[in-house]
Amino acid sequence: MSTDTACPPPAEVGEVIPEAAYGAFVAGWCAGMARRTTHPASQDVIEQVATMLDAANVADALTRPE
Image 1 (tube, rainbow, N blue to C red):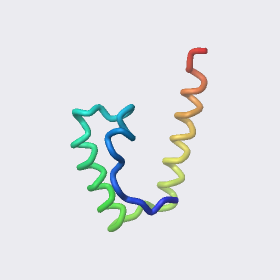
Image 2: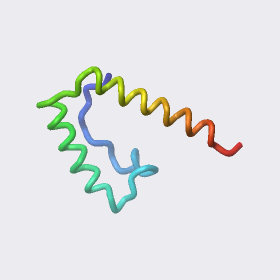
Image 3: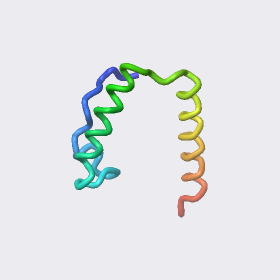
């Protein structure tokens, strides 16, 4: 797990974050980093998110046009 908390530059997230929304993304990123430091997520929450991401990847793979 990376300990780097610097916000990704626009070029790195440009495919998923529109340029007009980057400012809000940065604000959310900074707020998330502050919350992560003061109130880290429990292992249960981390496992639930990982399960949801796995399910989303499977759904994307199953519905992806060939």
